[in-house]
Length: 194
Image (cartoon, rainbow, N blue to C red; front, side, top):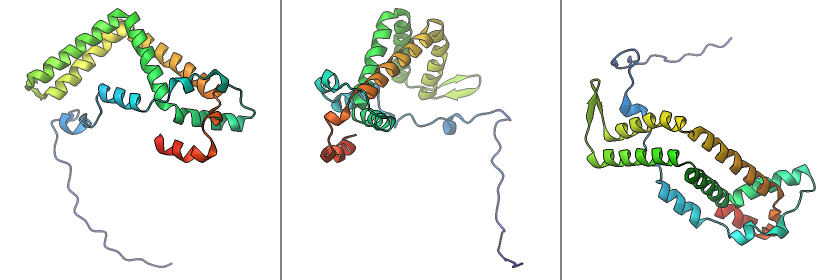
């Protein structure tokens, strides 16, 4: 048996002591929220990459697939080609749900107003000996809003919206014949746009 030699020495340091067994460092455990786009930016990105609705709803392009392999390919290509249209459909269904459920809309507006006030005030507060920055206060307000949203029925609305969106998107992706509008020579263009 061959022997190998190597230096396995090192310098290990124990982690710095924390405030206790169950303490959490709020600064290092929260992800950076500054990199996330705002809802308005997301809406603008979706709007700029929408495919024409005339093409999306063209009744002549709805056909059944001849095989499972073709169906799989069709669904994948439709999901990538009409991705922005599908996101827009989800947004429209979500807005419809919010309009038809005024209690949920009021809770969301109150939470948004509270977050705006916290952001404008921009000062730290101390709760139970813990200093909270404005971003941590906003997170705490949103976490406190979650049970209220649950009580007014936001869970049912969210699952209805997800279910209806998935159903509509799946039906379109399954039956829309993408080969009628995307040919082999512009397949590279499809990959570049999406």
